[in-house]
Length: 356
Image (cartoon, rainbow, N blue to C red):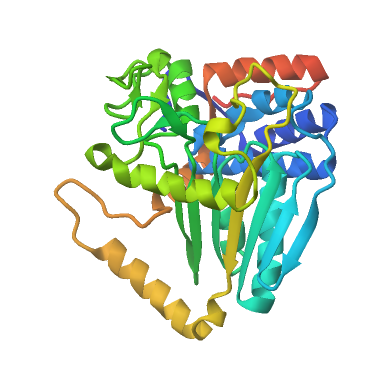
């Protein structure tokens, strides 16, 4: 998202230091502080600001009981290529990174590794976990359901969560091909961000309590599924995520989950998730895979654009934003700056220095 006059910037390293320090000051273990910070910084680096550092205040709030600050994450069941991980109600980012580590371990032996995660919490940016696999030479995928906020196509009630899908593929000599999408037209945190910035929502992405389209983020009672007039496709994809995340893990379906935003911040939400890793060389020789991916993205990026447009591979926009933010810093909207100030005062920590 582009900056507005109400948005200022802070150096990436300074923001990362502050977030990690806040988690530790709140009593989390090192693993939780590291994983939660890594996931948020992924969002803020790559322009997924709805799942970036603006979540810090919420994460500290839920550490009062909903989320286990020092979980004992265990693999409770494992067979060739498949494992079940119990997150002990720890932070969802820690569970997802640990789950992907296990999936990669299985894929190294079996060619493919699938890990179902149970007793987790807020997932954060799904792309962070898929990308973790791609950076290690594996194809990675990550899925998670969330509490109901998305209507069905032609529906007028909250049914699915925003239920993200992420898929990352290594490309030799280049940054990975990275797809990271909500199955809603926009993620709910984007609504909150637009409220903070005082911006109107795009048309056709949110509805009021009766399912009528609105643009005022303060009136948003539910989101539309991705696809516009063909939203049945987005609703179907959300159902796929629901099955992989909740049904396979034995966890709660979206419409049975406690809301992310309370008012109950003491009861664990028991979220499910699902991560997958595939070893390319188990399917075809490594050189064949490498040549195929390079050929694919080369022709994709060089294909003719429509007038005034630019063709990009999934992830290209995010990598461009990441390069810009390495120079300019992380954007902080007014609500996030206020939250940082409150957290800094509460824990006696120096807040990130704002850049000119």
